[in-house]
Length: 220
Image 1 (cartoon, rainbow, N blue to C red):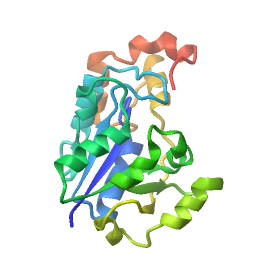
Image 2: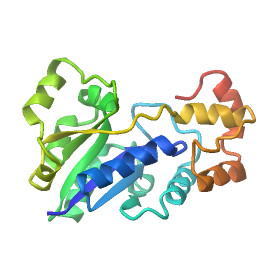
Image 3: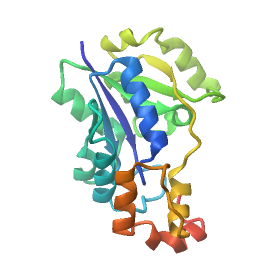
């Protein structure tokens, strides 16, 4: 059975760290596609600096030449807060014959029990938890959940839902907030983002306008 991956985020902006992790997950797990889903209004973090449409355009420019990485704009078109559970439910209705794997980082997994209707996530999809070198799994109930639901190999993603697969990924210490601060101070994000994304950042001036917010700590 083909497996569709779902990797959400603000992507404000999308950078090399996002892209390398996405590619590794796509190829190592043999996904039929990995959908990159930019959030319009994330519920657990400050509002993004760049407009939603521009963030989607940067993401599309970044993955234009990589088969299997697909930008999915559904959360930009949906009113209200961008809840992952709603996105998974929509995909389940659209692709009843496919397994779905929600891709998140270990830090996000540590806060999974604070997500909106989080237990339904495992009814709709498997979880793929990206683990960078040195990242430590959480303790408590989420550690027990990981132990109980842990999948041994990627092939198990093709069956049912509710499993958790830990996928090692390359550690790249790059943050979107640092990139925004660099641009706002007159710096150049070359080699932190793709050339196409860099061009859109400078053409739009989206982060230059955020200089006062960065200086006062008003972003993520």
